[in-house]
Length: 330
Image (cartoon, rainbow, N blue to C red; front, side):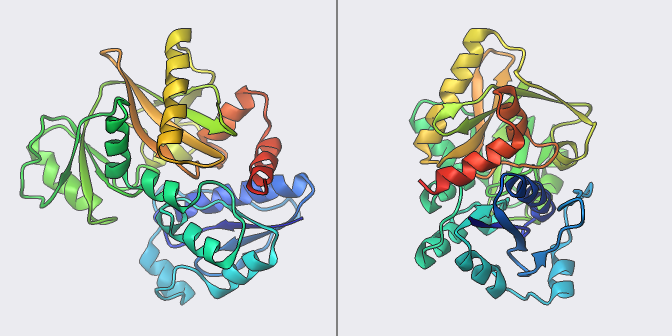
């Protein structure tokens, strides 16, 4: 079977996607598939070395304007050659993160062209990527989530007590995210978030421990705890090896672990997610289990969480990618 692994794109999470894509492509080749790895934005089919595909995520987000200038890709987010490769393949394995790869737009295009793809369909992708909409649906379904508010100009008070988490409404990988302790830090944080998106959210910061729960084929994987060595779980801590400690299965009371998994499954269903996802939580110092957000295309890099959770459940990386591919064909 021929699989086109689709990565890159013109997204602040481009480098993360290329790292996920390289690792996925290697795993699928090992599982016996005929594989090509293609950049969605440039349309370039990435060549592998004698040891396979590889891509190391730099410490900082990519300069997208420079990528546009250097590649000559212009404003089209889907390269003609990328579409052609996906149409020729039996399946497109989506290794994209952020932007049209996760907000449902690419999924809708692929549906229109009859291209089979992995993960969540366009409806669920839209619901999960819009943090305001996702949290509204969670709150309506009695899923505990931190209080939040959509905010406007930097000069306007957020109308909420500090500390707050300021974030773009539709980005992942902690891109554009800041923790602000007072009004003096607020304007700069809003300005930073607006580099990535116009719609900005202020969310009440919950003190506690951070966890994530993967969902695979209708079942919850073991929870993983994330412990950054310093600061918070930002872009650098997510993708630079050795600066974040991850514990899986997480050291949790059995009842709390089961409750977190049950809530992850509920969020997965509420947001109409597909064959796999990852749901993020804070276990507050008050004992509350707060859902932060859902990820429809979780990272698959060497430092990513979902593969670690799968491994704790006895599922190897190769087996995980093989299962995701086969579920898309069912």
